[in-house]
Length: 304
Image (cartoon, rainbow, N blue to C red; front, side):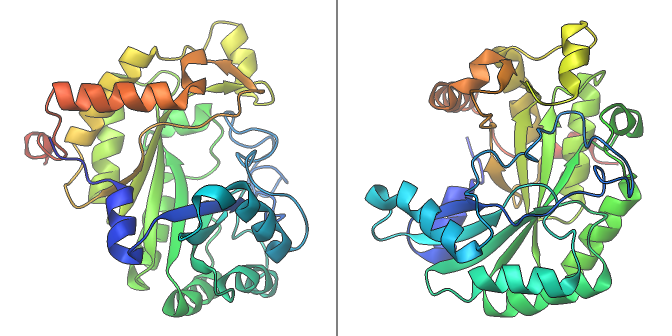
């Protein structure tokens, strides 16, 4: 069994335990304000998937609040400032520069992690990220979820696959570490479609991937289709089997940053099993071990 896990990479890069501090940059999203759509992606919560982020207008204050939450177990650790809520490059360069540097200039912050959309990376923003990356590592997270256009329309993603390809190419030119988000179990997708997305991400040139199942939140638009029976969620066993199949189709060099999601329990409608992250991770690790799941073991079979 072999899985290229982010915990191992963090130890190699930072030589110690690393904690991500989720903070809210106060950004919006072009898929909410009418620029490319309204309502956002159907699975996204009203807080832009940033329920665990600290709150406040000042980034340094948020970092201090977030550090307090892990103070007891992070005495000798380093921290990554994680701009998580909504699209964190969706603002003019001047605003981004102030917010990002409030984090990057701190001695206790070892790196920035910035979640955004592929269609929110204009030239001047890319150059800003490149400048910061020369001082401290910058991780960019891109919310792709699927490569299939029919699914993208169904979840109201709001951009075509070539926007993702362009973003990855531009980030790669600037040596900026890129992580792609993928959701397993999106409406109407077959097992082979899921594996096609995993393979595409693996071949796209990014350095990392985050995987989790589709879950239904009480303030997400997709809940209506779920209640009407138009959308189903996976059982834990189904998810783990599909997850393992994705891992086997990812190149060994790709770093896996997440094997399951962490939905806010107060908002979670389904699947309820995803609320118990410890149990899910234990079940995933047991399945991977029992079935000798090796990253990249099925990659050659599906390459064109």
